[in-house]
Amino acid sequence: MKILLVGEYSRLHNSLKEGLEALGHQVTLIASGDYFKNFPADIKLTRQYDNGFGRKLKIGIYKIFKKDITSISLLKQALKQKKYLRNYDVVQLINEKALGCQPSEELTFIKFLKQHNKNIFLLCCGTDYLSVKYAYEQNLKYSILTPYFEGKISKKNFQHIFNYIDESYIPFHNYIFNSIKGVFASDMDYHIPMKEHPSYLGFMPNPINTQKIKYLKNPIRDKIVIFHGINRGNFFKKGNDLFEKALKQIQKKYPDKVSLIITENVPYAEYIKSYNKAHILLDQVYAYDQGYNALEAMAKGKVVFTGAEKEFLTHYKLQEDEVCINALPDVKALTEKLSWLIENPDKIEEIGKNARRFIEKHHDYRLIAKKYAEAYTRF
Image 1 (cartoon, rainbow, N blue to C red):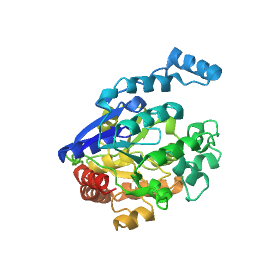
Image 2 (cartoon, rainbow, N blue to C red; image 1 turned 30 degrees about the vertical axis):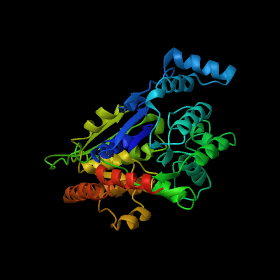
Image 3 (cartoon, one colour; image 1 turned 180 degrees about the vertical axis):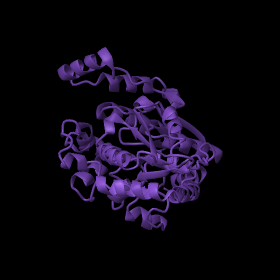
Image 4 (tube, helix red, strand yellow; image 1 turned 90 degrees about the horizontal axis):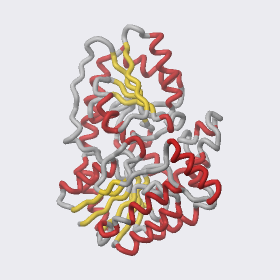
């Protein structure tokens, strides 16, 4: 098949592309790299007017004309590549706003893709109308909106999320769903809101390139190394404030037993190398399942604090703390779990080995690519 993947968040589409190509399919990826993360793409778009004077200009133009010049620029760049965006058997969008544009520009791009290609599929692996609506209605015991409900962050500072459930956004959402063959979900956090939807085609675990990401033997020789990578834009959304408080208690409790590595807003290539020496990685709190960063760390044999709720455990037939640590939104619980690992270091190696086996069994990029390829032809 000839397949076009549109957008990139976490390296998901890059790994899927590698898996599909290993199966003999022809794959093209168009994306802007997701801000500072700078993921690669075959057709690489450049986000403009996001910093310095350019950002001030963008804000001024938007206030006066209600036009987002970053979105306009991305659309123009994409449409300059028209000849490379036609005649695909499958187009897959990584999100309703796959290019990272405003709905008006995304709509123009989707119309072009719909007119010049066979089938469009959608992937639910980040914030969108259905997942945000489900979280806003508090159907989950906790979600990315929990910090908002707890008053940690204002609606204004979470506006990029609330935009998905604004009345003005709904016609765009409806157009997308009327244009696609169906939608897949990449983990439990999106499977749960989607599972009763008529357009839902099923759960597709994140693909991890187990050839590129190797298991790292990392015996504890002196101190237990804990890694905390911060994305400042998602600070409260990921529960970084809770991790920071727990780490302060751990440093005070075990000053001679732990060492910390902390990074902030680093590109993907630097991020994935920066935790190689770590034994424990703190990923996110408000999740039911693992995101992409967590899975890659698990593939390296790290003990990851991330989402591992009962829905995840049931789906994969796992026991608690078998392949990762369920990071609850509670400083006391986080501190207790960290203390347990520090006082039982043999568990770190055990969970790390289990994590690698889990990734190989359920997330191998070729296995997941085969599931996608079968789904594309079945639906």
